[in-house]
Structure formats: structure tokens, C-alpha cells
Length: 115
Ligand SMILES: Nc1ncnc2c1ncn2[C@@H]1O[C@H](COP(=O)(O)OP(=O)(O)OP(=O)(O)O)[C@@H](O)[C@H]1O
Ligand SMILES: [Mg+2]
Image 1 (cartoon, rainbow, N blue to C red):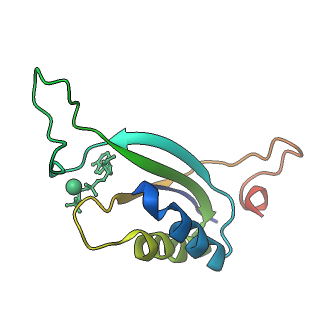
Image 2 (image 1 turned 45 degrees about the vertical axis):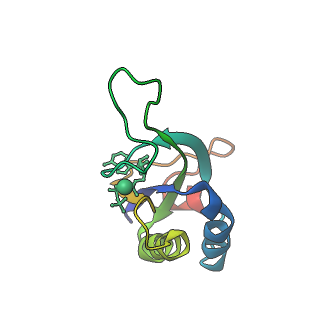
Image 3 (image 1 turned 90 degrees about the vertical axis):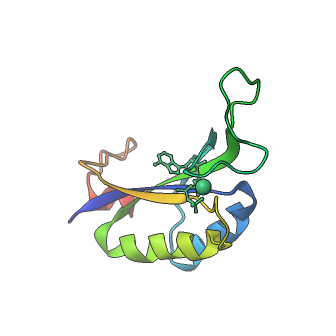
């Protein structure tokens, strides 16, 4: 069965709503990375100009979630709906195939390592 990595870049103030939405679809395994980024359109007050001290990057959270194929669409939809305000800068979700998963404790491989 196929396994996917969901990389979701969200607004930090959407973390609680997104976690609730993930729990509602039985997704508890997640890695959260604090990061900074820039999208297509500069956010007012955060535009990058060479020679400026402002690097144009804004605080974001990146969620890494590895799921088996039956969980993929409902997980993406949970994140998308919970993280959406309808304004520019809501973030983006990337979906990437995963070759293998290994649970370190017992050497579970593949889907069993996600259960
Ligand atoms: N193509 C990309 N590559 C890497 N990171 C990205 C990419 N697009 C968005 N991001 C990350 O997502 C964050 C939010 O992006 P953002 O929502 O502004 O995307 P956008 O394409 O500009 O869409 P919108 O028009 O809705 O603002 C960025 O700060 C950046 O961290
Ligand atoms: Mg943008």
C-alpha cells in the first residue's frame, strides 16, 4: 500500500484548529517544525528588498505527517479546511511519496509502522 508524506505549511495561529481537525480523522502522529517563509505575494510590511535589514520572511509552522493511502485525502482535507481563512498567506500543502517507514523500537516496516 502506498505511503505519503504530507508537508503542510500553516499560519501559527491555526495550530490548535488543525490539531483538532486531525484528531477528528484519527491522525495523531505529527512533527511540527517552527520555520519562516515567503509565498508568492509579499505580505504587507514583509516585502523583501536587497540591502534592507528585513529578510521578508514570516513565522510559519510546518507539519510533517506520514500516512497510508486511505488516510491521505481526509488528512489533507482536515488541514485545508481548518487552516483556511480565505486570505492570502493561508499556506500550502505538499504531498510526497514515501519509500519506507521504520519503527525503531521493533523494526515494524511500512503501514504497520504507522499503526
Ligand atoms: N512553492 C513553495 N515552496 C516552498 N515553500 C512555499 C511555497 N509556497 C508557499 N510556501 C510556504 O508557505 C508559506 C505560505 O505561503 P502562501 O500561503 O503565501 O502561498 P502563496 O502561493 O503565496 O498563496 P496565497 O496567494 O494564498 O498567499 C510561505 O511563507 C512559505 O513558507
Ligand atoms: Mg502568499
